[in-house]
Length: 256
Image (tube, rainbow, N blue to C red; front, side, top):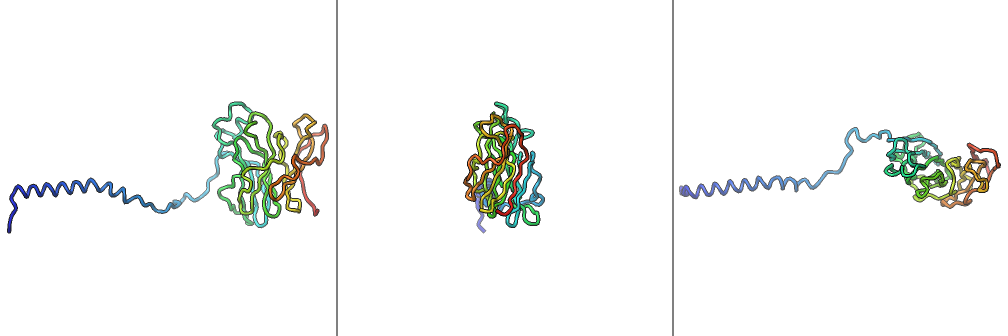
């Protein structure tokens, strides 16, 4: 058998050793390239349950639809302050507080099981949104609430607004409709019902402009059409008195 010279055998051994070393250096890079394809994300056992939301959830109301219910409430989970209301009327104190108090909703089926385990965000505007009320008109819900306007966050002036939520849980009015502007926190919505003709009727406490007070001395209503249009801008007076204080009005329909 022919034998290579000793010097050539050594050179060949050095060449093989160098090739093995180079391959060893490349393996980590080849492994990284092979990991680019990832599996489909999956919920780990124990992580698919819903935990209680942070902050405060209050002022709940519920309305029955065709075969389900819609619950609405004031939610403080995005607030970065202790109680969700700091900075409402204090100049300079609202920076960095998140969106403060918001209006959330969720549907429940006929058996009371929560359908929208991730709530419907009805309004997550800046500053506080409070006093939600809700009613069904045969095809959709109308949610009404008070909102502090961004330009007036340091005053007591708010707007009475509303938005529709479909039977499928979709927010139909991302930009709320204004039922009445320039109201005080005491002039909150009291009830939302249907009028039997496909419209909603919103009732609230209020005052006439010439009374010069923010304390409710009357009861007002306004119709909102099924398309979200306000049919009675500013509202209509049901009852008003120049000195009596009004509170806790309600509304019901009997036939026509």
